Amino acid sequence: MQENTATHSRNTSADEMNQPRERFDAIVVGAGIAGLTAAWHLKRTGVNVALIESRDKVGGSIDTEHRDGFLLEKGPFNVMVRDPAFEELLTGLADRVKVVTASSRARNRYIYRHGKLNAVPTGPIKFLCSPLVSFKARLRAVRGLFFSARGKKEETTIEEFAARRFGQEVADAIVSAAIAGILAGDIRKLSAYACFPVLRDFDTKSFSPMGRTVRRVPSIMTRSRNPKKRRQWKGLVSIDRGLGGLCDAIAEEIGPNVRTNTKVEAIQRDRNVYMLRAIGGDGPATFACDELILATPVQAAANLLEPHLVQASSTMRTIESASLTVLNLAFKKEDVAHPLDGFGFLVPQIESEFPLMGTLFANSAFPHHAPSEYQLLRVFFGGTRTPDVIERDDEELIETARKSLYDLLGAKGEPVLVDVCPYPDAIPQYYLDHIHKVEKIYDGVKQLKGLHLTGNYLEGVSINDCIKLSKKVALIVAERCKSQK
Ligand SMILES: Cc1cc2nc3c(=O)[nH]c(=O)nc-3n(C[C@H](O)[C@H](O)[C@H](O)COP(=O)(O)OP(=O)(O)OC[C@H]3O[C@@H](n4cnc5c(N)ncnc54)[C@H](O)[C@@H]3O)c2cc1C
Image (cartoon, rainbow, N blue to C red):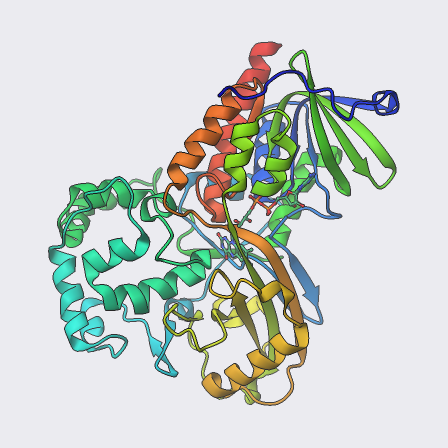
């Protein structure tokens, strides 16, 4: 069946058409990190671009609040420096933001298992001595490091991949905990190759994870010796003003064409020009552009595209997202018995009786997140294991968190600061078949000249992935704008 790409005239009334219309070469809808990055690159290449955001501030999921000397990251907490596009963004914003690297203590991580926190082993010897999994499971995992079966199917779940390579116990206790921290999802349903594309090549070609690592050593060494290729930042980073500060800095560079409090309600298309009907603080408004980038969450993009791309839009609707609620709780240092000497702890799926998905020791990783006499803890509830988290009462979540932290960390007394932030449908779940779904979405979008998509439901959920994809999209759009001039 063909997509409906005809000019769409529904909802067009004389009144709307009479609204003042602003015309841009390109418009980006949605000012999360994906939309901000796309608009930033376009602005730098000289494109007349506007960025339209429904909320009263930019950042989307990224939301930093400064309160009583604390820096509260309500959503994303840090970024792993992985892609050159992220480094390019940081370098480009060097006058506006200061990058802060996570403290060395953040290298220690814990997993909740059997009622206590267990250190995640950082090397093979420590792993062999770790009580996280049985001795038999440890031997199985070490054997898998040197020799384990390749993937034979086009797709595989994270659980199947991890169990085949390192044994079921490691998949259940360690991999599942790590995935809770990254995707808040279910390893039995998530696609290993869609979530971590590098795994596809490795899994289908190599018998030995260790052998592959050893083979890569010379190229890593060459890169680290080459000053041009050497990374300026390594590991986990944040920003002195928090990740919200990064988003504000990007918006400052884009300038007055960032329109917050403006929700795009419908898209019309007339002779290759996109017309956006929006509702803003000052009432309805229309915007026109040749190139349109949708950088909204998946369901919002599906709604906007439905009249134009029926199939692509219905495929988008099948992408589920996990909800979570983040609590920031601050305690006086003397009220927490645990040394909090690490990044935090994560809880695997099999510990289904334990109510939290994980907790980060915020100022152990980034000391600037709290005054020195306090401990700031970021507690996560929800993910696919607790889908009703958004409906739960704040007081109940605070009480549950307090009790769990008391038992595990010896955190007593009243927290001096409490913040509860719900994130409904915030983390897309790349289940089996995600790769095909994305191909179908892109095939549909190709039929509408000048339409482009970016965002966390396409090629990776992390901030790095969103930045990388948005840069790619922006360069395509910039080229098209240039060729139209
Ligand atoms: C609690 C939490 C913690 C996370 N932690 C990390 C982390 O530590 N590190 C990491 O790398 N990743 C993390 N992630 C993942 C990552 O932060 C997100 O995937 C990423 O920020 C999503 O960016 P985005 O721009 O695609 O979408 P969003 O941030 O959702 O932005 C989309 C924007 O579109 C706007 N919008 C929607 N509809 C319209 C409309 N009709 N008109 C105008 N605007 C509209 C929305 O208001 C929103 O601002 C975390 C995610 C969550 C939820």
